[in-house]
Image (tube, rainbow, N blue to C red):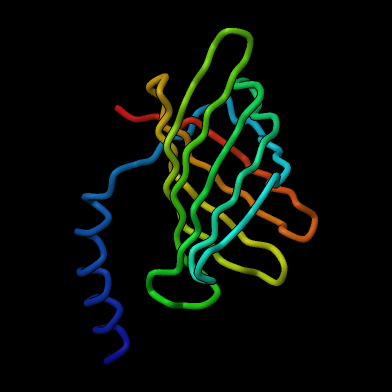
Length: 145
């Protein structure tokens, strides 16, 4: 009987939370972005800056700069910000990047929400391999009302 009461109490708590949740809709035009890490450096051993370039699907050639930090001193995870600009023909799109990362062996798993100058929000997941000097991402437009 006690377990039934606990389950009912838990459901009573969770149902109102889920009722107010907002649905996230992803675009159908997802694409991959493959970058080569051009340079990386640190001046204090705590903040790391990375520059990368490569192809970003429909955006064409892309150049990105990231600043990785670990403000909560967790050791294997943290946050990053960045700036990206792309060019395809005469069209230039810029974007700001904010996200989190988690180190998994030699790979850094990255997740971000990017705000592009063309009015599109992109949701991004991928990985950075500093040994292989690569960054690979899956990008999808975030559909917002």
